[in-house]
Amino acid sequence: MISQLRQVETKLYGEIEKQIANARQKEEEVIYAYNTWVKQFAEIRKDFDGIIQSITKAAANRILESEKERPHIPTCHKVREAQLSRRESSL
Image 1 (cartoon, rainbow, N blue to C red):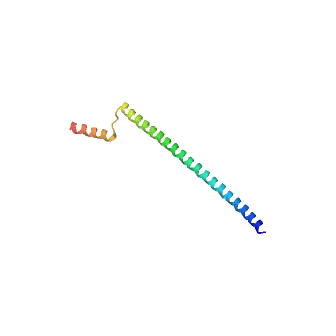
Image 2 (cartoon, one colour):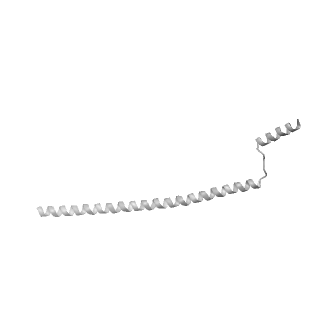
Image 3 (tube, rainbow, N blue to C red):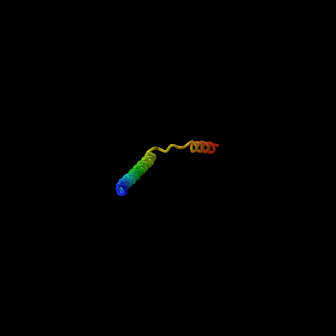
């Protein structure tokens, strides 16, 4: 009877150890997959940041170029100063 109990106990503990080992293996695989996903996400974000910087730089250059091509339009403040200056010189 005792030997049968030991056999059952040994078999039971062996099965429990297998399940624990399988659970650990699955957990390691999940962690590895998660770390891989995080790494890929970081690479995508880095690429995206580079694209955004390129777009921003191109847009800024385009604005600067268009300002060079456009004739200078005086601001309201400058127009007002010119008007006052003409009045003063006509007095």
